[in-house]
Length: 152
View 1: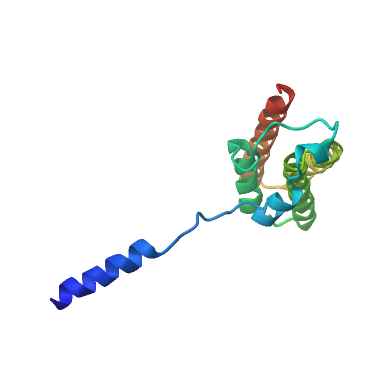
View 2 (view 1 turned 90 degrees about the horizontal axis):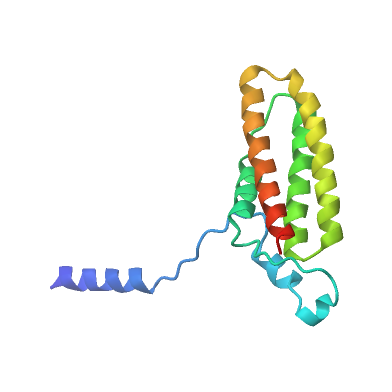
């Protein structure tokens, strides 16, 4: 009887506990609720018809930002940090339907990307390959997002 009671209580506890999906995105839930305005607030601005929270490419960019490796070269790490901020600003701008902000973030990304390409020459072969994989994946995901925005 004790075992039956114990399993009943255990089952009740397990089924009554609410769990949330873990959000690893650098875009917090508060950010989404604060930036989303009504359609009348947006006026004549060009709106992006993309749900950045559910977009696979945006999720991939968020994951790459959070898993980007550290390198021995401090100037490279500084430029990678700048690149990460540009990418976060890019995702924020898309989510907020901020076309000028998106353009600034893309320009900042391109600037950091070019600096990183110059700094790659100082890396050993293994670090260079790892960095190249991350950069290619980032550019690919940005291009896919940009293509989907242009298609709207």
